[in-house]
Amino acid sequence: MARRVLPGLPLALGFTLLYLALIVLLPLGALVFKAASLGPEDYWRIISSPRAVASYRVTVFCAAVATAFNLVFGLALAWVLTRYRFPGRRLLDALVDLPFALPTAVAGISLTALFGQNGWFGGALAPFGIKVAYTQLGIMIAMAFTSLPFIVRTVQPVLEDLDPSIEEAAQSLGGSDWTIMRKVILPLLTPALLAGISLSFARCLGEFGAIIFIAGNQPMRTEITALLAFIRLEEYDLPAAAAIASVMLIAAFVMLAVTNAMQARALRYTRRD
Amino acid sequence: MKIKLEDVSKTFQTFRAVRGVSLEIESGEMVALLGPSGSGKTTILRMIAGLEYPDGGHILFGDTDATRIPVRERGVGFVFQNYALFPHMTVAENIGFGMKVSKTKRSKAEIASRVNELLGLMRLDGLGNRFPSQISGGQRQRVALARALAVDPTVLLLDEPFGALDANVRRDLRRWLREIHEELGITSLFVTHDQEEALDLADRVVILNEGNIVQQGTPEEVSRAPNSRFVTTFLGDTNRIPASVHDGSAVVGEIRLPAPNATNGAAEILARPRDLDWQSQGPGIAARVLRVIDRPDGRRLVVSTDAEAHLELDVAPEVVASVGATGFVTIRRGQVFNI
Image (cartoon, rainbow over all chains, first blue to last red):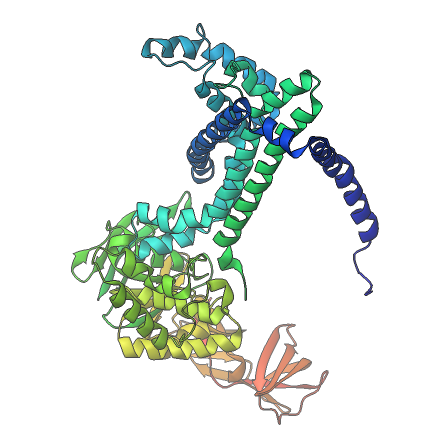
């Protein structure tokens, strides 16, 4: 083997692999093992029960809406933070990370207080017949709140690095602002947006703490998959909990694969061959 | 299209980048804006393009006042210093972009045939489907030029067009750009800090310093009759030799040079290395050789005079000189400026 100039590869590689195996792969393996201890029929019965299916629907639908909202709002926020200089910009920049720093239970409790019957927002929305707490709308808001930083933080550096002369070139060629946004800026942001979407969506699927306070958790209507798995765990039905969790695991893998493929497609112009 | 600048000025925060510049560019002319960094040359180019708005003065395209017309309606072709190609579009898509987004509708076939024509003109045949990251710097430069020309601009503006290229590629592209210019006859203005590039390429050279035009003229005019010490030193390697002027001639020791425009008193002779000669015998300025630099086209001597001033001379390769040898410097020609 050729001698390497940079030292420490065997040690560093061994350490990281060991860590990855113990902390990430072992629990996942245990999960799969537990779920596999059920027979195929039992497994299928558990994961396709009406209550479980309803929970998938609620979770995926709410996550999709929350991510779509964050896509628009997060892009706008990243745009404002990179393109303009205004007083309080740095404070706003710091506030973006708040959902990361805040314990999700705190977020859930404050959202519930805010949107409850007597809360500031809940009280204001009630006359219009809009109910947030204990509905899917509440789940969406909780999800959007906790996953907001993902889109902002993935798009922001790309936007900062965008060469202003590329936009000027498009302008000098006669492009309108809207054309430049659509044909030049958005395509260049696509890989970063995809990365942000996949992270944001994954976080929404797995969010627990912020949601359970505001969702009401009525089976079939506002019960998310993560909570259902938790309920099974509390009933000491470990294999059922593992089965439901494995569905979430598979969903996460599928989504990762899809966004990776989309990203590779969006980045095909960087290939040098 | 004829372009006219009337007393144009521009200030960034506290920096006065351009200070009341007036300039006329004739239709079909190729003009170089030459100056050191911070001289305002790029700002002038960007104001003509409409990428900056002047604080004062007017910019006329033909008879129309274009001062407030935004860049997308000004009809200029702009080639950026780093080319600013769209990295996610192929070469052909880059070139076709302006035609695609234009208000005048063109069919897909029309655009494709014009793109092909430009690929041919720019010697980029077969590269239409590549992405900018997959072609060389010189090719990117030509794509940028093709993209700017595709929309039939009234004027072509180039910001340091050869700045990012190797010396060899740069010289080839320079000659080639000149050919394209003669073929298309489009009014062209380019910015450069490289005097060789400006003199090689332009019909007329406009020399800028600290936001003002210090001299303009044909390459011959500015090379043979620079009007200031700044222009002389900026255009090439210069030796500065202290002298005194008496009745129309500059005197250094036993050397006399005609100086019809200088007034009596202290002065400086500015002479190119090639305008100095090395003799083993006087008369001349006594000096000692410090370094000998051999080059393919001759030899450069760095000498030190008795006054501890360093002079550089370009002499024929046959001239015998070695480090430490003493001899005399004579001045064949030079520009005399009062200090």
